[in-house]
Image 1 (cartoon, rainbow, N blue to C red):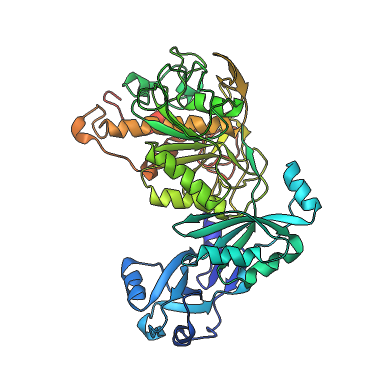
Image 2: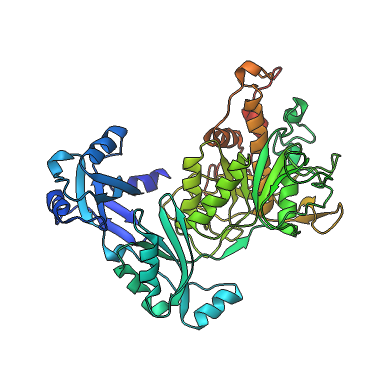
Length: 507
């Protein structure tokens, strides 16, 4: 967050997507009164006088408070254990409390957006909207589904459970959306997302920016024993950059898991080639971490649950770095799609998640998630200091994004539906896998014990966190001289030059 934006954040406000709640006035109801009438179905908001700590959480739990979701600043959605006799004196660090209000349940602007796909256009022409309904944790999912489905004109498409509650996907008449706020279990309603894809010099550019200068490769770091998770269009497993006579899994030289039916897509094949492709020679079919492997799945359902489940599946299959070259170009909101990435990163601290920012003019979603690494595209050599593609930040809550850049203009990589062909594509989609592949190399640096001596030392081996990988990449970034200001909301912290962050013996 920029200094000016940070200064504007008020500790007596609660910032929700539905609006800003003024927590400055005296509470309309005491905790004792709330506790006396609370049922297991009621939800409340407590704002603390400072950050939550383990000690404070323990006091709250002992007093009968069940803490659910966080709301900025220092506020939490909670339920109160019936009969616990909670009082303000028992939790003196609670500065304000209120019942969760129905007016907070509906995102503003539902139905106002113009969509690109025929399916969504047809839905709008019928006076209907596609929605994502987030259900409070602790509610019986089926009872909420039944209550929602009872509204005339509602079609529930599916429901998904996750540790923080559950999510419903549905269509319904636009005019009746506010009826959802009357259902106890509904926490928040937002418009369903519309996902679009976001479309060899990279190997040395991401290391040093000097022609064919590759110190990581020179020290034996090529991606060995690393696995990247790819959520994208189908990767052509018959292309020479990935093909093998062995079945998918341990014996296969490239593909450890293919979690859907096989096929070929130009975008997905190109992305995978930039990360870990290898046809056996230093040509345009060789990726950044060319000795690494991949696990693959299609783009997940556009919900918090879908994102979390897809990333967790890849993590369970060995992926520690994840690349995503897709997003929703129709909104700047921090919503459940973005939250899914943050939930995964919080619960899987060893993972680094990279995501291509929009190719439109302004930053969109879900690159506005807090914990992933948002990647833009710079020009290729010799114009590495110039911007190619990537929406300008900041996020709607004034955080600096995008964060880092790599070449993505005319990037040559594997071409799907060919035996060994290549093609040039342009966009942030091409830059993101280059950064993700670089993250795999950084992970190998630590896994082989290069830190701190600069030589591979078994006794110095560590398993780096995703946060450490992100920090190393960002620390290596250099100013893109063709972009005004540094750092900035256009280039973030600049173009990755990872060798600047990694010490090798003899440097």
